[in-house]
Image (tube, rainbow, N blue to C red; front, side, top):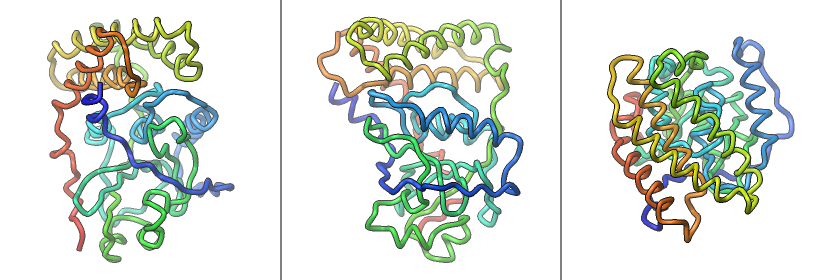
Length: 297
């Protein structure tokens, strides 16, 4: 399990003081804002006991691309950001409430994502660790505390960061939620989606409870998820249906990563973890870095 655990890409462990008051600018919002606030309320009022939900998961949830609290790989995150549902914003774009920011260091490594509230506040989950909760934070929390001044002078769009010679860069995407029939319009995927939702409902209970009597069902669900992943991964379509198939596969794999830090699991559970890890490792993030990123000046 150690080798699998090392493949799990940890999103940035952000630390910052939670902002006490949120001042929303109505001119920055659109009709999707109310639903986003409901999702944010759901997440901030959720307490979990499981290792897995990370910054990329919260970013996809507030974008309307998934309803399940779980691990999300960077490959799944970019699957959506690079889709027709999202628009990569140009360097000089005026930013709005709900835009998704992705943070890069000087090596062009993507290490964190968040939802923008305004120039001073963001919504995020700083790490897949159990002790890191969802919340509204000061913008400076995207970097380690010792780089506070760097983050403070680098607020704003990408052009501002370039002008201020920032050692990190944040690129933004503006997304619209996936339609309600995203999976149900395709019969083969709809059947799997229905079963997956039932498993995800049980997973949510497990993550908030960790009751010993639920462990055996948790293991059975992981094994079943591995079989579903194999089933979805063996298919190939074209166009929007292929996009939906791949999104479903990423979603299944992300659920298998829930509590992947556990030791002494049954062999068939360990094999399910290995299969999901190998699946995600097939997708390189090298080509997913937005062209707008120029690196340090």
